[in-house]
Image (tube, rainbow, N blue to C red; front, side, top):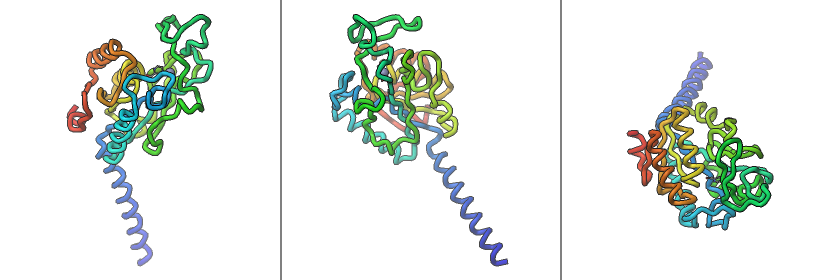
Length: 240
Ligand code: VGL
Ligand code: ZN
């Protein structure tokens, strides 16, 4: 009799703990955060090979601080990581007589030829935030023949692990920011919306390669139903 009571107590405690876990997940309201490509090679802070304007130490510090606060508030944080082999088709060095930022046709699409960047296992490919923040890091751009600005799929249509991870975690709404506004942030936000997520892009936490393409990217995201916020405001995120 006593033993049975104890068993019951243990079981009910366990269920309470489980319930707590569920309640915590509910507090996040199905909202997940995607920090896009905050990697050394894209920053001035780390003297990156493809350093984007405005990515100094203060920018990285601001992204770090904001992301830590979101994590502390219970939101799961996901990162994307550009992760190319050295012979990647998007590097100008892998095409004879090409210069950085030349545009070629690749698989019937415009392909910007970039300086080599985010080569697998090099310091420039490292994510600049504490990796303990992340529920998952989704790598992309591993196929030599295809670029992959989107965290969801590459230009050949091959899916990353992103959707299965978000689905498993019950995510319905995504807050997206990072580098670069006009490439990987744009593509990740647009593919997230196409996959059925509500997407909120935070402009002040993002930096673009060029002003004209960044402006176009913001307009395109808005046209595709993405909420573009200048500053992070979780009340606006929750209400969207
Ligand atoms: C990116 C250019 C090449 C990005 C990645 O993270 O936006 N841009 N590879
Ligand atoms: Zn890349």
